[in-house]
Length: 546
Image (cartoon, rainbow, N blue to C red; front, top):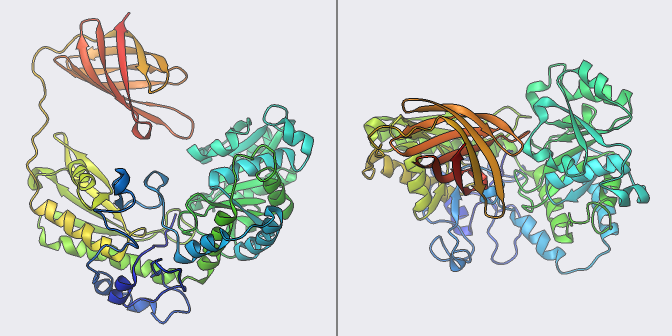
């Protein structure tokens, strides 16, 4: 997703020479996002101006004392982008204002959505639109709308009784967010060519799901080609465009999509838990019918008047903003970080320009790379230092001691403030110039434990247990073999040094492969330890040799 950045306090704006985007509620910071009607031309957005600020912009408190630290939570500077796990984007001042104003009144929700639906349609280049609680919710409501329309009996019978119980999807569109369709109890029918699509569409097909990606636009698997086939069979086409910009004319509608979903809480900087579903009026109205305030399948996906009006404010702001100026500004920011590294002879800083319009995650970045053998710090050690520091900084990085010493960190600025850009640049510079001392991990010596064979594995999750199996082969310290999960199967590989074992596998969960990093100790015919599953955290495991 592209981003629009939040920024600042009035003092920061004065330091950068930028203008406020809107009249604000007392206490809310001004938006430094360029607007087409503003007095600051795109060419005047110089990095030197932007980095003139010397304080971290906040409306209340600072990184040391704020509403989060008072409950034991450490806020962070987000160098990764609009990622939900690190709280996504930051809503615009006019969004905050709209949400506050909306909270002061009561309305009939149906009347409100009828009015904003027409507004969303005009702003987004479609017949109509609705606000949802995120893009996954929009996907669910779109799916149910295509299954049951506004038929009350069919709606109440979901998710068990339905005539149309399949969604066709390009294999390349499978992703973790298609859970929005799967949760409706449909079968996801994959295809890899237009011919295969024709063969798999049937009377059971409720909808076609396409994940927006411009790489397919000039191929037989383009939305335009696939939508034409779907229309031959009367199958509605849904496009998940959460990661793209809300362009006009709408490219997905023009390509034949009946419904398109966008994230409202990412690059549009609306309420974080909001989504925008646009398209054919009857389908959008059916999607709204299936959700709150109505007592249908999507009742749990309640979108409040505050979120709805906040999203409307964000979409209106999107149409006013000078996106070219924003891109130039962010590019200036990442260039300033690259320039800051010039005093380090062993470090290379490469500016990553924005992708072309229509692309996914369209924002510039900077990649700082080095050889940790020369500098003394790896990329993962840098990440840990920044995450544990104050202000806390979160970014992506590579490089692990001692076998992968080529290191790098990557920064995307478009979610950051001008002052945060300077903090990040200075902090990385100092850690590369004068890193703490790091030792290589100690590798145990001695004869490697014998682990070849079949192992019955029990994984102890926070709640519940999983029964799995390892079938291992061993050559000295090296391990290869099979990992049989409860449902999924894959290969596994790793090492054993003395009694310490470490193995890695990736369970082929559809759309979202699950990495499993096992570490532990071997004790004869038993071994045990912990398994790290990335965003799913850690669990304990134990195994007994068969």
